[in-house]
Length: 239
Image 1: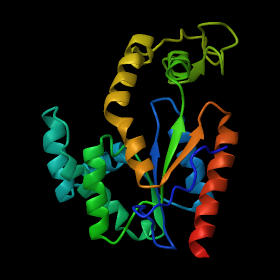
Image 2 (image 1 turned 120 degrees about the vertical axis):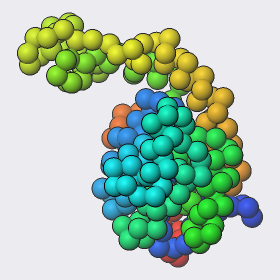
Image 3 (image 1 turned 90 degrees about the horizontal axis):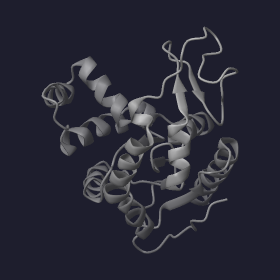
């Protein structure tokens, strides 16, 4: 169940009645992608993954896409204003008229403040920040247990083990552990998350829009709680 209350104080951001503008928060391996897919189906909302929309903008050759490509080609980080511009293009599209699910941005409080200001110019506000709370050790267990075949088939030593340890069920090829799935690499990613991204939890909590969920539960249970919470938010706004 959720542990974050309504928290709607005087400084709360509340989206217009017809909109469900959501952001996903949580460490790597928390299951954000899985839950985003289910929420999009439940509420018919577009899923805005910053990595995906940047690649899409580059491929389509938009002005912002060309700017992003210049930075990416040089191996540099795409500046916040360019990323926000690409996000706003999606937010202003007809498919996002009733809301959206944003994943992958912001990653810092400064980015969150800049995004809030950009949304305000459009007359849009976030309805809720959905946090999937998963302890570090569980993240390490989830990600370090992944094994992949040369053909891209994914297994997990605990949750989805192959019939023969270390071998693909389909073609018998040797399964490998990717470098970014090694425990020491995962722990470094978690350090970055805690230092840069975790402060967003307090930021959105102060605004009264944080909704916290236990990400260690089974995906279906997590989904059920998220769906009920979003449905309640929608109903409250319509009353």
